[in-house]
Image 1 (cartoon, one colour):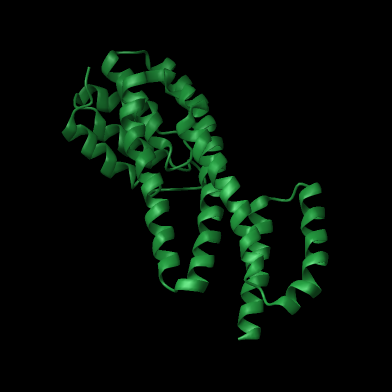
Image 2: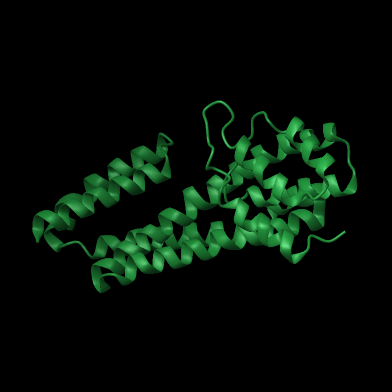
Length: 232
């Protein structure tokens, strides 16, 4: 069994529309159904997919390709619909959790900090670099997710512990911490002397009370932006 170039392109383009029919009732179910329809040629299987996948579906949009690829392979292989639905119900939660941690908790805050630093020093280079790097990573997972999902089938879920997922997250967390420290060096000396210690205590309390790391980073950025605006 092969995914094929034409079918890959159709699925890749369809993956960008997985949230286009988002609703509170079924989340991404219609988008997911549309993705599956693009990957199956047989009309009877299309009807079967339509009957089986009209319910709830929700995962990280960039990681959905892994599930789509594995599901299409299962239909090509002739697996039972009940088994396919069971796999999707488990996989969507797993890929949602890992995708949120990778993109929303690690990569996006890290690149945002780097973009702010470069933006302060070099202007438009900061936001442009953010868009380039972020889109390279998310397009990588959209594309390879289809191939790996189809090649590995239901075993694709084990990729969540592979280096392609864990290594970028660890790197982004480390780089984000360094960027946050470097951003403090860009503040005027009098501001650092007056505010660093109380702010450090505030952020330490927030970490101990398990506030979201993204929330803490947003607060830090707001403080620095306010400082830049009022001291220019």
